[in-house]
Image 1 (spheres, helix red, strand yellow):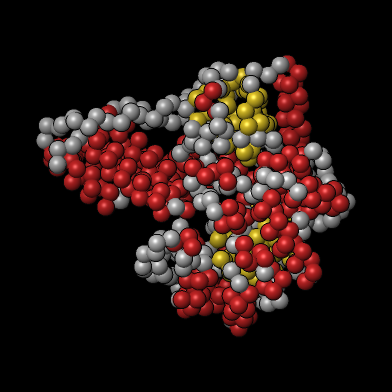
Image 2: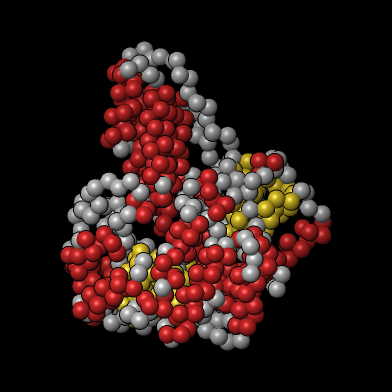
Length: 548
């Protein structure tokens, strides 16, 4: 039996299947409790214990996983949710039923908001399961224990489970839900675990069944013969040798240089990125400075963080994205009114223009940090949709002391008008996550449309090609900073379309570096042309792979 999904990485794993336990059953609707006060106290205690457990898991996991888990812990003690649970218990429901109903209602609301908020619905459901498990005295659903290595099969994985996977035991991940930008995919890349997501037939895989999970092709072979297993084992050994090889600058087989950069969300992760071979930073997300604040951080506070980042990459390129707020990342001091469809509303540069003082302070802090360090600072604006916005941002950035100012291409209009945008911008960087969702009208974090959220889609690739042509004509840099750059085979195609640098989660750098060395620029262009001519994402993958 062969199954297919979306592969994350280029590695392969062989092992027996272990399945995630099914979710806990829905608590009975008609059950009652002995007394509201005691039931409320019992439930509050369970919520607090789950929050403490998630915080502890985050502390042990560190990095990006810590942020995710700490956000989950806050959910467990969210005042509005707790008040809702208490009200339901007071009305006669048990703690288990009250938690189930209150969290489910909030989940439905988050799904309706779409984007980042819709992804939070999955995290919220995991919190509810953990609280209900504590209340009923059973083990919360999670990664099964095993004395031997295994391939984990699940509907999806909660961040709390993915963050602390035992890498000596979990050989690969297979999920029926999710897409290439889901938490499972992102954390799998960060941990260098092969994963195949969006596998429709994953539930057919039986406990203990031997499988080969090939992330490079997105294929799963169940009950493989000895020859297939031997071939997979050979590829595993080849990859181990590749990972132990000396780190070299990113380049194609013919010597064409392609800078390999890191996507970072915090200055403290810089050292780890350098160790993994990052030649600089292609996307530094500044939201972490703002998201937990009721007011914008001061110029001094921002400058200190930027200096720490720039010092870690002295002499190297560091691309910083101006605050990308709104839509899935609302901020109280910027987004104080509700919008019907925030993903298409006041977000990115649009909201910064409406609060120009915030933008001026951030650019001032960046310019001061640049003057105090030796890195090559580039600054770009998020969510730019037309040339006038590029003119506005680059002029303001230069006024405030930024030497190199550019914009992100995340919507089809900016891709189609890239030539005009590059008349003012010093460079462009393509955010493939948003470009894909806006091109295909498919929220990148909703499982119901995950099959559309694929940057291999020829419509997305044609927009990338348009930007690549504009960059080449203007003699300016075209970077890729979305998750697409972390897909080694797609990275080759993106270079063939005109990308001059690739930025990704640091753990993906080794795989992408190795893949680029296998092709010349002409071969990369040939694969890109084949993918462009295909009618679908799956066909584009197959067309490019046929030229390997």
